[in-house]
Image 1 (tube, each protein chain N blue to C red):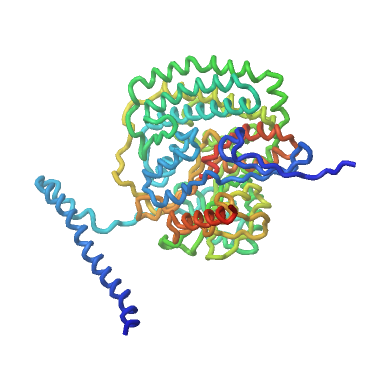
Image 2: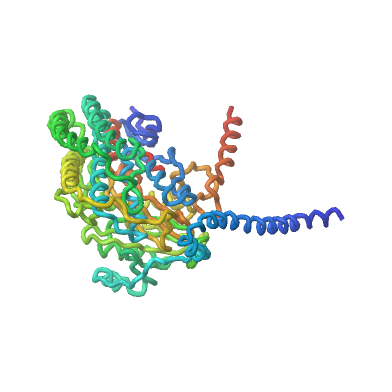
Length: 232
Length: 366
């Protein structure tokens, strides 16, 4: 009997929480009404307000197809290796598939004049609407001679390894280590993939969306204190 | 008779020449360096994670704390990134004033570099002189923004306030004084035999290597690569003003010293022209009180005093803050140039090479 009661209580708690949530919602809307009511003394302002708040519409960034010559030239050189491309806010993006051929394609892009790797950014798309996969890597490339910028995107599932591009651009070293450290993306075919910004004995990858900004901090400090006490 | 072996030496994190908390693991054969690996992260504050919890305006405060000796440039890069995604046109007055302030920031950053670089190599006088001039610029920042180092300048769509009264006179005084002071530094250093011995043929890196290692700013221009984002992709008012890119092909520490000195001269030209041509009109366009950006992504980079400062911003279109903000700090990337530059040199040269890279650890560790 007692066990049954124990199993029921969390459900009841959830139900009561939901009720509580429902209760708080109208409470929130009420104070919004009151300032509107107080401002309603000016009849001109009172009318447009109810139309404003309800549903926030999401404005999307405008995407256009590649149109300039240098963009088409690169797309021709890549052929069907580029699975997608668009121009948004004046920035040219191409999408590549992850796989064994990935480093070769990147080397081909390097041969086409993109000799400067500005940045490798990792993104966790788990709370983003309409993303293809969990993670993405954005390689920001620049051609010093041609003065063109290019973004190469690769989408990844959790735990999927990407071939390293360190042999093409030496600068990729720190960027890949950072993506591994903070986002937990594994780069294959290179040496020295270890943490760079966080301590080596840190657990977890803080830029992942499931972790809050405080996660891992207290546990790390506790481990550190324990270690210091054991050493003493 | 004698046994020789490679020994490991830790330099930093509390070494005075590392300008912060940088630790270098040096491998030495005698006194010459075989290998080096920089250990960073002592100043990691998780700026990118914090930005995801903040609104767009609050994140501006975080950018101050990246490269804290040139906070103005960080502010500008971030605000421009927002404006690029939001597609907002900034009034011309704001553009000119932003250019002016950023160049003053560059002067202040280069003065700090000159001071500490010279001090590391042993020229104490320049340190005192350069800090005296830097004080002028910090006073101007204080007048405009209220802060001397952490400026939080500029806002989405323009400026926070109009240009304060009396600001122009301060800048005019500075323009009058500064060329003479710059000549003083040059008289102390440029033909100084000790300075030349300590910097010439030290930390050599070729143009191809510099590009491959992703170096930027004065470091890459000291290797003869004509890469300056202010010229390549002009932003703000740089396209309308008359100035020249500083390039040297010495590839060594001395060449990078000359590049930075020339940049200071050019910055002064830009400041003067921006002040003369300051347009009348609004200082800010009309923008919503609560900023929301369209769903999408944008990468924008500017020429910060240390090099290419890039922001990669992703917005989900719903929140009032960034979904993801990645900062490409020039110091972080330039630090990779340390290994090819240092290998084969003596321990004393490491001090000169760290100085010439001009790394700021706040930006490396973020």
